[in-house]
Structures are given as structure tokens and as C-alpha cells.
Amino acid sequence: MEIQDINQNQEDVPPPRIIGLTGGIGSGKTSVAKLLEKKGFPVYYSDDQAKNIVNIDAELKQKIISLLGAEAYADGLYNRKYVAEKVFNDAELLEQLNHLIHPAVRIDFEKWVAAQTSEFVFKETALLFELKLNEQCYKSLLVTADDNLRIKRTMDRDNKTYREIETVMQNQMPEKDKMKLANYIIYNNSDRDNLEAETDIFITELN
Image (cartoon, rainbow, N blue to C red):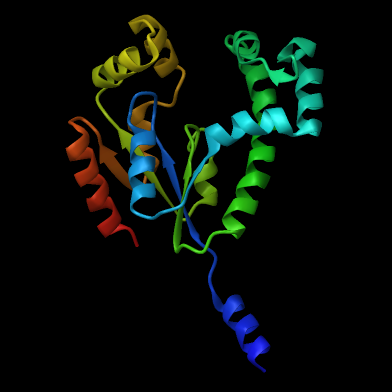
């Protein structure tokens, strides 16, 4: 009888509510993710996991090689520089690559969610709205900042030129379009203390 009661209680536990967390380059998306983790919320880093999955998923490896050639891997590891150069000016090829990688990440994410017990979990991804992943989430959170500030942060962090970062930003969905889609917005135009305060406010409003 006790075993039946335990099983019944487990069945009564609702699945976690998924909050999509996104932001353009230099917005501070990852900083907010780390703050949420400090507050006890599980965070799935989609972009980081994708980097792992392309190296450990044998079937995915073969599909990527078939699409981009053997040079897509060097010494058995994903050749990011080669792949980036290959798809940079080829939107169709990039879309084909994404159609290979994202389903594998989705399966990994679903397994991760099934293991969580928190009421809310966060899916951190740069392409939340571009890939319509927000439609699979309970709600979405956008971290944003003024363009010039985002460019400066990325220049300081990645040692890239203004023009290089501006090109990346131009290839991303405009912030105004993301704002229309987001349920919550954190403006990261100040310092770390302010960002933490804004994150705390978001947490109190989360429902």
C-alpha cells in the first residue's frame, strides 16, 4: 500500500514549466543564466550542449560529414572554424545544418527536463525566437541592451572588431521583434549589481 501511495504521489507531480531564456550577442544572457542558477533554478545551456553533442553523437557526426564534407571534423572533433566559414554566407546550408543539430539537442533537453524536480527550468538559447522554440516553452525571457553597449562588451570579451560584431548582429533577429515576442524583458544597460536586481525582480514576477 505504501508503494502505491508513493507512485501515486510521483504521478501527481507536474512537469517543470520551461522558460525560454534568450538574448543577442553581448546582451548578458549568460550572466542572467548564471544568476538564476545561483538562485536555485536549473538552467540548460543549449548552445554549450550543442557543442558537446556534435562531438559525441556518432549518427549526427555522419550526417554533418555528409552535408559539409570530411573537413567538418578534424582529428575526430567538430571543426568549428571550417563549418563557420562554410555556412557563413550560405543561408540554405546553415538551415540544413541547424535541421541536423537542433533535433539532437531537443532530445537531449527533453531527457534533462525529465530529470528535474523544480517548478521552473530555463532553456538558454540564442535562437529561441528564430527557431520558434518559444512555442515549446511556458514563457520566454529576453535579456537585451543598447546596441553600442552590446558591441563594446563583445569587443572587450572576444577581441573582435566593431565591424565583425555589427555583422553578427545584423544577421540576428532585430531586438524590437524579439521584444514583441517575449513575455519578460530584462534590460542590461548598467552594471552587475543592477543586472542582479533586475533578475530578482523578474523572479518575483514569475508565475
